[in-house]
Structures are given as C-alpha cells and as structure tokens.
Image 1 (cartoon, rainbow, N blue to C red):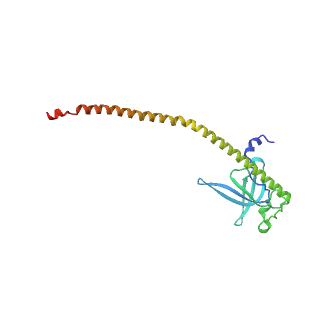
Image 2: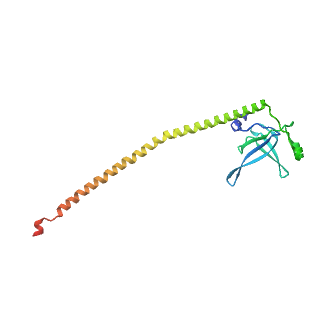
Image 3: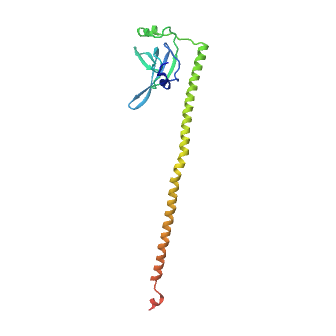
Length: 204
C-alpha cells in the first residue's frame, strides 16, 4: 500500500463497468467548447490498460475512414461521463499492438462467450456499484435536508423581530396623525364660533 492511497481513495470511480483488453466499448466524453458542454461518443476496441490506482489509463482504437485512431483516457477522470461495454473479446494478450498492422477481417476479434458464473459475478459487481452510488446519493440528500431544516428553523427567529418592529411603528404613526387632526379640528371649530356675527349686528 502506497502512502498516497488514502488521499487518492475519494477520487476513485466505482461506477464504471469491468472491462479488459479486447472488449469493444463506448466512451462518453464530456467536451467543453465555447463555454458549452456536450457529450462525444468514442467507440472502439480496448488495446491496453496500464497503470494502477488514480493513474490508471486505457487506450481505445477505432478505424475512421480507413485510418486508425487511438485515444488514451484516464480511467478515473471526471471527463468520462459514462462507459458502456458493447461486446467482450476473446484475446490471449494484455496489449493488442498487433492490431495496428492488420486491416479488414484480419483485425477482427472473436467474441468471448460468458458463462453463468461470470454473468453472476458481473451482475453482483453491478449491484454493489449501484448500492454504493445509492448510498452516496442518500447521504448527500440527507445532508441537504439537514441543512435546509436548519435554515428553516433559523429563518423565522431572524425574521420575527423585523416583522414586529414595523407593526409597532405603524401603530404609533397611525395614532399620531389622529391626535394631531383632533387638536387641529378644535381650534378650527372655535375660530368659526368667534367669527360668526350675531343677528343684532346684522340688523343694526
């Protein structure tokens, strides 16, 4: 065990299926262009896997318009959106460099037939990966719910004083104009009473 294994462990991907050299795969690669992200599918034969841990890579080869094209991908890179195994090949080598010199039917790889035990092992591995992914999703969901609940509990307490203060000010403001209006109305009434002339003055 290397000293960096504990640091690399959180970055290792467990959602990729098992494959080996000779298998035909579809690699869904995330490509960012002009600020936009799209998915590009690269399908070909895996000719080698090398390295280990976080540094593990695999090389995929395909024939495009009569020209051989090879791409090397980091196995645990986040740029790989999804990896699909189209068919499994029967080969007796770990590195299929001989395919570079072959064309047409000579470059074909015989398909490997899986037995019941292998199919059961693959199904069990996929179930474990799905369970691990669901557990991680549940943990993240619970964390989000807990944070949302904390925010919901803290928000009313913080908002309550802000809501009560304006009500008190509004009531005081409403009472003040009413008092001022009544005070102003009284002098107006008195002034009217003083300025009205009597009948005797009018006749005289």
